[in-house]
View (tube, rainbow, N blue to C red):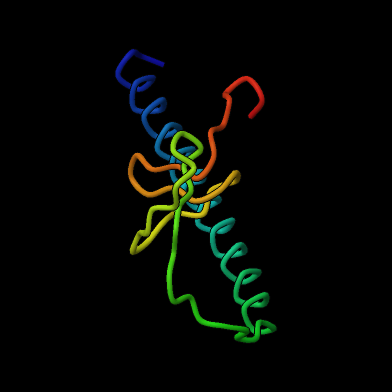
Length: 90
């Protein structure tokens, strides 16, 4: 086998592996979506959020926000964080 054939073979194998990885990722994503849809079917509305506040530990004073991301240790909006997470304990 000459050098050109080896390069073509290596590129072909690389493309096949890349395609297989992408297909697997799509498969896993579709399974996650099916599971989350099943969970949502059983949910019932229990209230409405009228105000949302973040209580940063630095000031201990609530700051009203329009939206926030729910993280493992509390709400986050930009640089506002509900609780300090020490990286050595996370």
